[in-house]
Image (cartoon, rainbow, N blue to C red):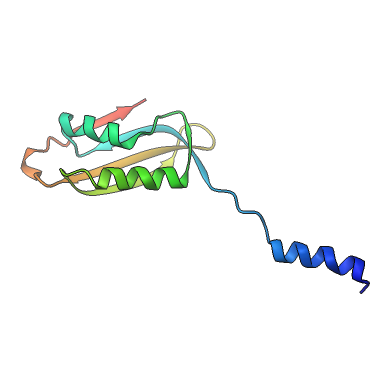
Amino acid sequence: MPQSLLTPILIFLHAGFPTEPVHFKLDKIEIEGAEPPLLRMVERALNLEAGRTYPESSLKRALGRIDRLPPVHDVHFQLEKGFERGGYLLRITLKTRCPRRIAHHRARIT
């Protein structure tokens, strides 16, 4: 094979395919398992808005911020198919350290 053809092939193979971060458009955010005072605290820590698009890294950072809140014992994020094409529903389920005071309030942020 001539040297002139081999060089571009090697450069292509070495560079690989470009990897772009995965982005998610959040149609809706639902928070379950939080009474109103904790719900407001979680909404502030979440720092995400419905209708916007976020990279996977932003969602992971939001999970970490919520998990570090003192009243939160465990947090579970679930991305479900959204209402619009390419959109997602972000469902956040919380377990708090004081389970007897939870009203299992469900909030919808639109």
